[in-house]
Each structure stands twice: as C-alpha cells, then as structure tokens.
Image (tube, rainbow, N blue to C red; front, side, top):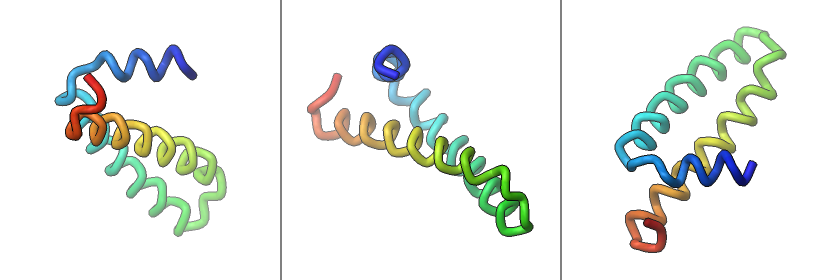
Length: 68
C-alpha cells in the first residue's frame, strides 16, 4: 500500500482531480447497481470510497501547503 500511495503522491494535482471525478461517477453507478439488488458491488464501493478519501486528503494537504 505504501508504494502505491507514494506513486499517487508524485502525480500532479490535475491527474488526481481527474481521478476523483472518475471515482465519484463510478461510485454513483455502483450505488445504483446496489440499489437494484447487485450484492457483489459492496466490496467495490468500500474500496473506491477509501481511495477517494486518500486522494482528497492528498489534495487538501497540497491546498494547505502541507504536502508537495
């Protein structure tokens, strides 16, 4: 996990913002599938929510000047 997080931290903010947008759209679709009765999407939702939180944390740190 640490290696993946280091890789994400080296990416420019524009790429991270694009990834956040993609994850938001994907989460919307997964939640819609779950509402229709697809039980297999629960784990995917959990994983994507965690990734989204990590990206937002990195972007917020950059906005505050804590991260590079």
